[in-house]
Length: 210
Image (cartoon, rainbow, N blue to C red; front, side, top):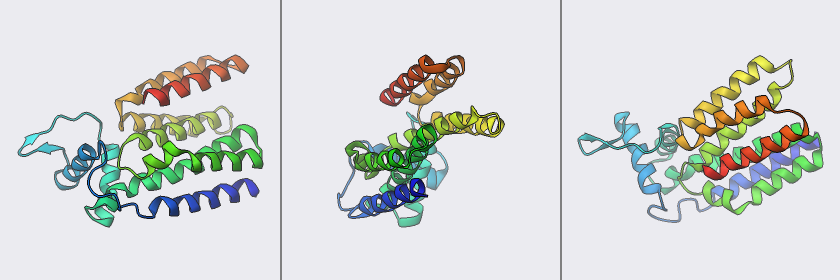
């Protein structure tokens, strides 16, 4: 019970902190100028355009659709732009806590993992900025959680399928995550302690490259 209550309370407190003054920084922050514009185009036209011409698309649309969801609900303003990342940044705390619990079955480590994620400066900044990085991290982390659960024969079919689904959803957020497919293949070939170390190393490389 404690393993569930602590991360939920931490996530709720973190969500409130992420929403406070979320729209107070006016104008675009860094690459928001590209992604917010893309989200507007997707909401209005279903595709990204530049004037009356198709726009050169750097990243696939999933992350921009999620930003667009915030705009559709809260309006085309700074709060609306950043709401989706604030929500995903909070859910990341819960997903990470669940992964820690599955790996160690320790309420203390689960709560500690949630707290460390909530206090991480990079996660906090990205949770308050309409960028695409957290969407990528979110889908990859869920894919890893499901992949790990899929190692249990009871859950193999569903979890393996779901893991691949989230993995390819992450690719649809950014081409950077395509090496996650290689992570799954590498993980399938590795086993034991050596395999676990190799998996963790490759996962961290994947996040760093993204």
